[in-house]
Picture 1 (cartoon, rainbow, N blue to C red):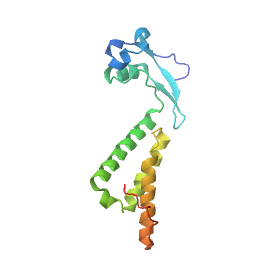
Picture 2: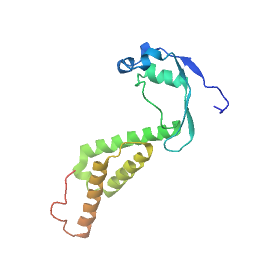
Picture 3: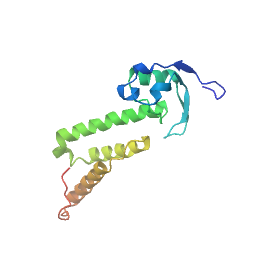
Length: 156
């Protein structure tokens, strides 16, 4: 959409919103959705939360009406891919952490992905990152044949 384009509008049907959104103040006065321009939080590119996309988001997907877009479409797609991949790492860890705790490649990849996720406005998972850093440190200590400091081998 060019800067000179007028925002497009589509009719809103608040009766189709989620129950929580129906209890909001917006329920009483929202009659249409208009295109909303914003800058992507990650890449700073200009993006538009289109009126038709808002209608689908709030009336079909039942997202909360107070939801705002912060990522452009390409960044959102990448953040979704990262989210799926992180869930896969969590599942692998839950199923086989006794084996994976010494797998440096696994630990490094998981830590790198957690760090990358923070650049997409994910909540920082400091506890998990610290656990992975400690596992890597302990693995390197064990690899050198040195004994870890008492109490340093925190199970995770």
